[in-house]
Length: 245
Image (cartoon, rainbow, N blue to C red; front, side):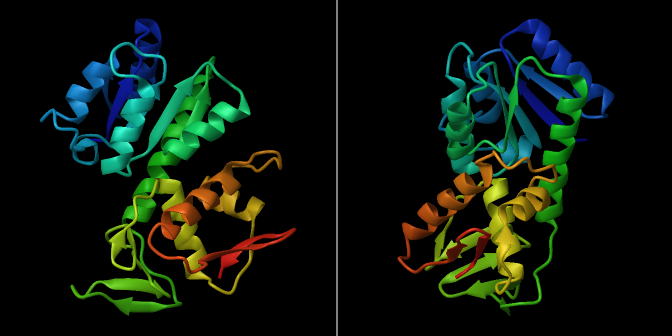
């Protein structure tokens, strides 16, 4: 059964989330502080991620007692690419961009509607599962040392079966959406994707033009690749969008 970890110190809100998840057929596991969440996520106390084995998605409030929500987000993202939906009363664009930069896959502003919670959770799970079992595209295919099919471009090797990307042999720590964008671009290296197209295909939602989400994720991808390789991998086509360089 799909297991959702709900990290929220407000007992009423936590219970609302739990009821919503249970009605969807998911198992809701509740934590009321950052410390309790850490115990569930990192039972060995060493900060080694087990969220990818124990949970399928995390709903994470930021303003929680004990270990801050921001720290929980960073620790999980260092070890796992499972979806994390941040919940906050802060609605400013700067806040949303900041936590997406830290690795959040979505940002839900309080107060929220039940239908919105369901749509965002189901969408995040659908994207994650789709990519976990995805196959390679038709361009730049090959096989790695283990015989698994991969997509190769310059010094970048993407393994869709393992949902891993390596540059010069170094494993990239990518969020779900960062991986989705990279995978989509690599499938069609000659195609220019508009921001609207990337948003609709990766987030599977409507694009309203003012959201800086796509730019933030592409910027993060470039930075993570640049740590290991100075080659250009994602090219900006001004006035249109992005393509593989």
